[in-house]
Image (cartoon, rainbow, N blue to C red):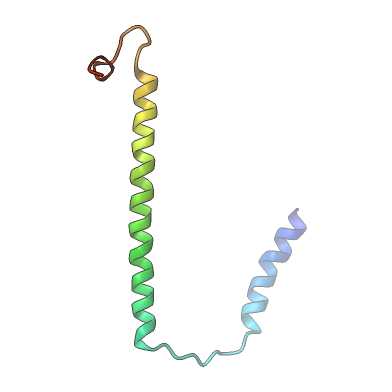
Amino acid sequence: MRRVTYCAILSLPISLGLSAPAYAYLDPGTGSIILQSAMGAVAGALIFGRSHLQRLKEWVGHRGRKSGKPDVRDASE
């Protein structure tokens, strides 16, 4: 395992040192795509976190209730 880690750490600087320059062109549309991707990632993370936070609250609330006492919400149904 140590040998694999050592080889991986050693290969990264070697591969970066041997790479040729990429004369790339970034047009204005590229910045727009990057901005939209970042906004989509933030929106997705917020929705994911909100749904899982709600599940966590329900799970903690359910485990915190005592089995002998009915919940007020259960009595109204």
